[in-house]
Length: 294
Image (cartoon, rainbow, N blue to C red; front, top):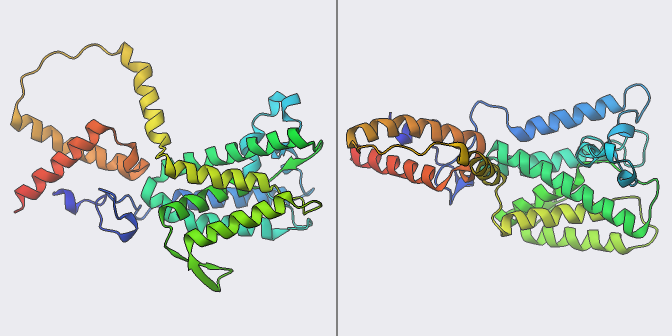
């Protein structure tokens, strides 16, 4: 079976510029799983005594005084306003709609595992920024709920990847993605500095947006970071390989099976998870298949 006949290699406009497309087929996407889990937590929080779950999972401004509650820097992303509160169902509905709309294409590009890591780190980062702001300006008893920081990061990573893509403000007014991003930032800054505004964590939104933009601008990859850290940790325990005589026929037989494994890795984690050596092997295999089928 040639490289271009495999499920992992598909021509797709959304992956233009990539060597390999990683759009999942016949498989529930990671972003869909995130939405399902978050909605399930919201439903559970509204059953029985409203807020019983978010009281445990929400990020509180006194976290540094209660270090055992450090889990809250990530679990606050699973909580949202209850039905009886001012935002009600619109809080989770808006967050999950934006996450699902823009997260799908990012997951196709970066891979499911890398997308999940990006989203979770964005939630933690925006939560820590909010926490720092509470300590700087006061706000004892304040708490943070919602995935808005992570959702803002997803939105801005999309905008950075596709700045000219036409998006519609409130589903009516069409504009390029970069302009919508600029409007978002101006609005968040305005409400952030406005006194007596609604109790919305605008600093967390701005932190998430900045994180998404920085992730793109600096070419970060958590999959590469984790794989490199693992190699650095265990490489010292690996024995030195013995010298082997190079056999071209055996090399190409091994390359075929290795290509399957590498394509499966791209399917799970995205193209950025490949090391330089793995990418070279896969390109070598693709070149050989093109020559073979001429």
